[in-house]
Image (cartoon, rainbow, N blue to C red; front, side):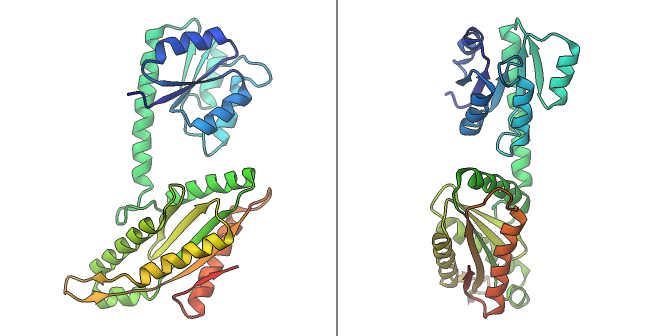
Length: 297
């Protein structure tokens, strides 16, 4: 079953056809004939690897690679240069800019296949390691590191597409008291329960719940208005408030959470740090004004 995608970028259609001919049996092939369309295809299709020519009109392969590496969406896609440039200086430049390999034309099919296979395996290995590093071991949700990467990408996309981005921060009320009363293992059970409620409350694949740290969680809501963000925050608050968390002792416990909710269409020049700070201020207001509530703009 073909499930890995290769983006082939070359202004010569014969070169594209030659590569696609022996790769299409193993991979889904996407093509682009210039730098601009290559960048669009990379962001749209998120290929597993890119085969990139260097000599192209308007934008060279070097320039394309720089733009790919500059985008949080495409920066980790491995790029192999396949080019007619044979000078060692060009090869050194390509590798120093971030390409994973440099294959000179005319290419050997067996060599191309072998190198693609090697770099795809390496990319999968790196993805696995990164995924483990970006997950909270207790709850299974993305951790702060995973959140930072995701919100940076979504903030940039919202700015480019002029779409609202919603963010919710929530904090478990009196969590220290809960831990002191029922013990830290029960506190861990509570955190896992909150994570499960967040996951079940969110219905869109694009919505992301993360463990921000300690007893704090965040929910990232792309393409969501202020009203929509507030409504989801309230749904989360009610779901948590109405959930019974059993103890090993047989006792049934309940908790409440305080939430800050905010949505905005980012503009050029807006800072992500300010966006997050606004949500944090609303969360602080919710805690200060009595807890078990959602504060928003």
